[in-house]
Length: 486
Ligand SMILES: Cc1cc2nc3c(=O)[nH]c(=O)nc-3n(C[C@H](O)[C@H](O)[C@H](O)COP(=O)(O)OP(=O)(O)OC[C@H]3O[C@@H](n4cnc5c(N)ncnc54)[C@H](O)[C@@H]3O)c2cc1C
Image 1 (cartoon, protein in one colour):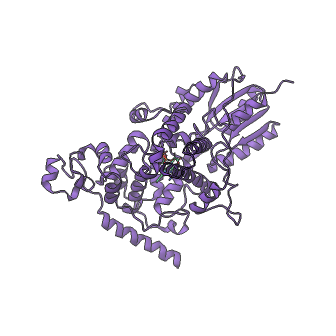
Image 2 (image 1 turned 135 degrees about the vertical axis):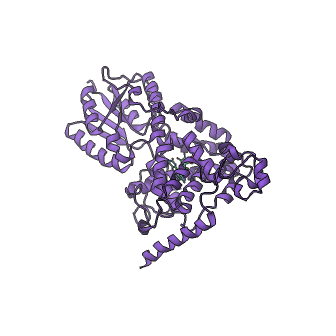
Image 3 (image 1 turned 180 degrees about the vertical axis):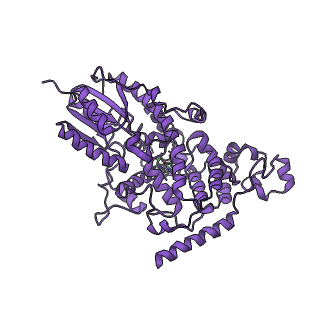
């Protein structure tokens, strides 16, 4: 008996290994068709941002090449998935449509309807988990509800077995003659102006690069991760976030490789072992963000703590623009914002510092920072971005308390102690001695002169006085606390 073709609809799972939908399609026995839909209309406000588009181009090119080696052509189409997926299923004569699940509220709603529509056409449909260690609805508190606090969530995760990754399928039979858009025609890469030079220098999208990055991290950096992960001046973290976001590598693969590393340590709870568990606990923050988003679909738009809806935000547009351009006059903030613009990525510690500065020093709504990150980060991820901005702002589940306001000078001195990070991204301050680097406005005039720094000219004066801004933020917070109590 001949088996009908299976259509695999790729989304945020742009890999061949540990891809359960592709694995099941190959196992079903018939030919395999592969589809990616650029579904901007479905996504609305959350369609891919600029930096993500740059990444997507490279990732799709890599996926197409890897699939072609297995005998399958990647079909690219643009428009509404509810129309395109059934159409390509018909064109390929598919009897089954498989995909891996996504958790963005707009995708969840759309996919549910699409599944029903395909089933109504008599097609077999199945969706799989490729993006998470555990499905958000399977991890439950003792009372049977979702978690709102990270620590017990992480404890619960550690009690559970993580399924091993799926193997990469061997050669498959493709479906001939399906029409595809040309990737270049989607114009995902910027042209005029071409702002992607720093991204090209920093990153290589695709599954092979993701595996390479994980391998290099396990070999060179994981042992010191526990101690050094907060240092933006060191290459101390994995930088797997964009690869994880686009599903070029799955968390089960990261988990399994880290467990192998732990086994090689011979079960010793030494520094390397502790570091490896710390790394897994950070991966668990990603799971936690997805857990929160799945159970609270308004997370990207609405504060988790409702009293924050009444927060007296400022709408200082000039201050917002200065923040985006890395011209606040606070060196660690400016270094971070420039790193973000040039490379599409930002170290976690500095994400917290720049986030706190926007929301608490400038009193600008966290949603504006979230939107800026959405456009500029290569790893912009609805769950992680929303949950983290809410965490920084003090309005999220298990968030940093609002009154914990990062001092950008102390953060700089502590986490960039030799000033390497600031000197790299804010070269106009490079000549300042360490003592003044994170607070140039306190430096004596002759020190500034020797370093060639002209405050208010070659480098901005501080946009706000941090101590005064802090008092203002705390007073604003008292307002909403009062409202909540009334
Ligand atoms: C304001 C703000 C916005 C953020 N926006 C995003 C975003 O859009 N996309 C994104 O992937 N991360 C986001 N993060 C979380 C975190 O900063 C990045 O995941 C991390 O810096 C990525 O670097 P890495 O891969 O080297 O991390 P590593 O330290 O090597 O960690 C490994 C992986 O664990 C996950 N992870 C680590 N820390 C966190 C965290 N705090 N929260 C959730 N997951 C985490 C990531 O998938 C990461 O790739 C944000 C954090 C803040 C404070």
